[in-house]
Length: 437
View 1 (spheres, rainbow, N blue to C red):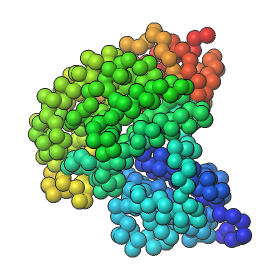
View 2 (view 1 turned 60 degrees about the vertical axis):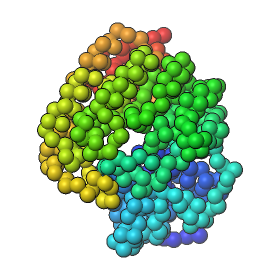
View 3 (view 1 turned 60 degrees about the horizontal axis):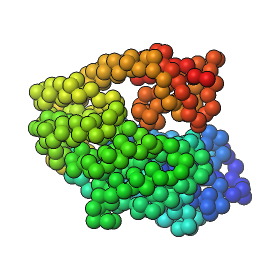
View 4 (view 1 turned 120 degrees about the vertical axis):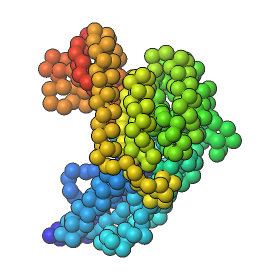
């Protein structure tokens, strides 16, 4: 058992879930250090006496991972290895009352909007002068930049509004300031994230201002890649497309989660868009931004999804040929509209459908990757693993997309720098190449 001492507290923040959670943890870390409190993020040293777990509560698997992590630190606390355990984030926000009774060993639970309360409990003040400044936990050369919080969309399956509240945009000035501060500290690429980036600005300015935001960010000196995530297809702001096409430092890349293509399922999902309009938006994007990489997310097994709907979805994936694609199986979430429906697609069928789509996407991906053999591509190198330097192209976001591998025994790459790479081999989801002198 660890012997308690008069040593100052040391806090370790553990983050689960998406990049938006990661940004929240980075803000917490920045505030703690701004208060001269010793704090780390996911330290492997096991020398912290206070743990803050930032949880995810989006779908069943994420909720289970959050619960398992909390219980892991409950065991550490009961063994005397840590003194205090605090929980924040989406799971805590959504299930706080139930969890307080079920896991009393946790010292306090905080919701997604209770940063000030969490800081106060940790002996810190919220410092407004730190707005726009953030310590990042990613490699220094790339960072996630949250442009808004919450969501106003009524999607049947999604619990995000329950956990994150209504859409709230940051001002253009605040976002640009944060981008400049990141660049000043060595960041070359930013990923713009939100629950719904296409809604940006309506609450602040009375109209969508994503185009203006992109123009302002493109003018930040030293910012070499700007990448846009989570663009909702319904009411897509087409005015951003000429800007994406014209600005060299805006990646020709867009993450646009369509979720489904069947009119039947889109209506049940309350997506506010039809099959015809989805095709119109996607084709407009490809027309206006030549050679753009499109990433999407698909949800299978939603209540009411028939075999006919799924076959229609498969045909859409085959016909449209997305560059990047992720698949989720439907999770029956309390207090969502879909929870009022019968969860009528068996778990085995949900899983089979997801695997079928990913097998189809693997075929599409290998064909697209094979077409790149012999080409020279600009690559940003993130890390070294074993005998390989690993990087990404303009077509790839960290963690979720393809990677480029070069043999470290015959090549040298400076991490955090760009290099020209000639592609020599292709795999389903990765490229292999040689750095050109």
